[in-house]
Length: 576
Image 1 (cartoon, rainbow, N blue to C red):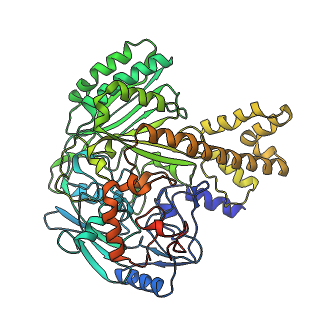
Image 2 (cartoon, rainbow, N blue to C red; image 1 turned 45 degrees about the vertical axis):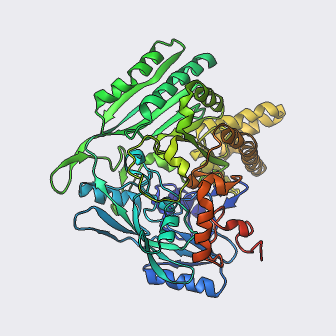
């Protein structure tokens, strides 16, 4: 038990511990949907030839094949049980820059954080993910791939120039605009683990930004009426000022876990604006909040410009990476402590819906929708939509859902063992022994909001049980073995309840409010009509490419192109 506890603790120490192991994943899984499972066989590929050999072996022996780099996947597409063969690409870590630094070839195991630092030193910028430990040449880009400044530079898929791919036949091919063009289109948003094993990608890079920063603050209101009025005012700010190429980041509305249901939190990175311009743009909204009486800036609006750094030529550019507070590891990789809360979560829900530009035309109606959804809490991701952006991607033929280019934001809601958003029972894993040691670990990592929600269950039980329930989160050491078992049972019950509420109430409410499509990489495992929701009118074309490059369905993953022809585990064809 002690050795197991130490291993679990190490896995939460930083973002790379899990991904540096072939059988480990960034999250535990999704309650009632999937659990991270170690494959029976694994190939730790160190070359493209290793990948070819693994694919040929799986095809010849009719093995379930799964592809993984870092294990950053909410839908379980990089794990499979039942005699599966894992192709682990994490050791393919080469990069090759063009002489003019305008393009870079990246092998499948490279992570964005490392590539960001290479690019910044050269005075260049590459558009990848927010989290530095996400792979730079895998499912991120193949799922579309939004980053902090996507409204300026486009998605990962938009910036993809070429890819090397090992097909189900074992052939290694180059896919770009002039060679295997249909496959290239499919790789630019059609989903990872579907069309082949990508061993490298070549990206367009951009001149590094010279002026970036972040605006942040927290508003709380004392009444429902005041909150609704504040959100209406924010909707004007959002529609008229924030939906431009200059802005990314997240607006959190109704955050019970960290504040109150009547709250609005801003964390908004900006580009190519100065502090005066940002403050001027916020001035009317900030004044309205300050003068409202029943609303206030709990954390005052703060605008801070990023520091600058010299590139290799001596030019001064924005120091975008590492992000403020980033922690460097001895091997040169780095992580953001703010992301550690996402490690080892067992999700009970995750859903996203695009908010089209057309929704901003009637600001009162949009505000009413946002206020209603604030009951559940949600994030408004400005960087995960391209509407009113730079248009850099206009000539790029990508296969992700076209609604992304016509949207103002992505509405996102996630939870882990709690009815409130983003709260989490960190470290809870139904596969671990239900021991006292593991219960202590779960209690130590759990957020205060989740503990309070657990304790509120006292109201629905007999008084004799109340002290025991409180002890589950306050004095694990004083529990009897029987009480420890009872605490584990309560935890399981709450996960089941949270999952049921998300599936039956929360996710349907978000779909009803914005029924326009979902972002493939951050979607509901149980998304209905997923083909249309993820890809819209592009799905028939993607199926044609799938049939052409993988007619036998060697590459399978949940709700991936062509998966409707297989059972849920991908072991048996439904149309056989």
